[in-house]
Length: 282
Image (tube, rainbow, N blue to C red):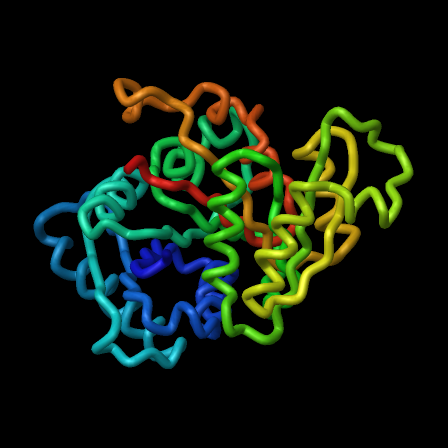
């Protein structure tokens, strides 16, 4: 499912640390990695030097990650980073984009010309965002948000595929039911009888991945972030469906633009890397 990965390098240490963790996953060892460096539009006299600097940065990163250069594609482009990332992701048909994020919310991101916010709005690819102010840890506790939507079910499949064969991972399957009160006491029997959780747990265990099930009421976005903090989660996987009609694919999603969607809230507030899973049409 994640056969082609695009890493948009901005020099952020946290994003580089996340890439190191990804390269430890057995399921991703055969994935094709492309590292992208974007240089700002420059004068012709300085262009050659800027390209050389960017290429050297990529080679330094490859050496730091101890990757065989023969198994990595490198791309250096001149232009505006937010559009270049989208263009390259489409050109090479990647399955996942990995990039850093300042974690800016709502209008802050717009006023600051946030690259991650722009890519988040317009990409059809799964997007792994790593905030600059979090501590990236070895991945052990993986939270997967579960509901009955196709997007959540696909996100679970991606998570299973991603962590298959990785012995350190334990899944925390998290179901937030907005019809239940946030402070309602949930019993073990309630969790076992929940059809969405029980089905997801059976699928995860059948692939040899240990898991725990969490069931709460309340507002999904806030509860996901709260539980992630309570259980010291290292990595969140969240279905983030594309809801715009085809005629509006190249236009910003106003709900995401203003930060009111569940995906946007979690990517801003969560204190760990967040993988927003999207499934392309067809």
